[in-house]
Image 1 (tube, rainbow, N blue to C red):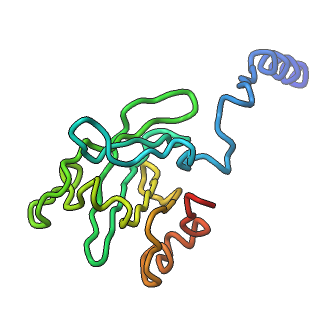
Image 2: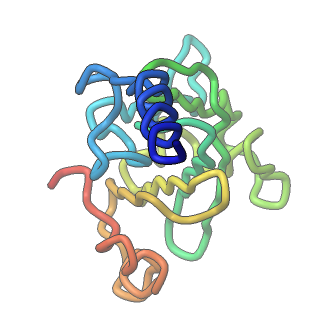
Image 3: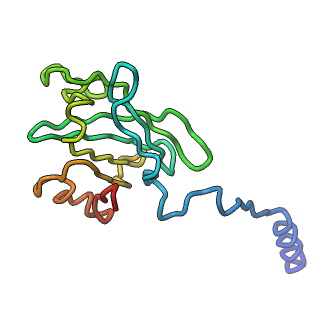
Length: 169
């Protein structure tokens, strides 16, 4: 009797459990999850009254995206809040940031000491993506060649994801 009850129970449970399947293209490839889509990076001088602005798409949701602007000994960090969400990830936006303010008046996410028209070609740009819990998931750089002691070369956390890649690679 116990064997019959066990067999009947397992058949009933087996029929009630369904597997939910998603189309293979609905989710980003695991290797790309949490990475910035290189083709969508658009950071620069925009608008009739030129100001820093731009966006990037990340192949995940609820990330922490920060843009670093560096020239010589001056570095600024600008958070890029999530603006939209889609099936394959989210878009993160920069600015608009007022450019060319005095260094002592520069305020992250609001203004920059760098003039977007005069300084853009001289800057090192580093985009870092972190998961919602703060784990670094991607790092990409472009612009001026970074100095050999810059964090993209010596940061252990960046080494953990295989380095900070050049946008041109």
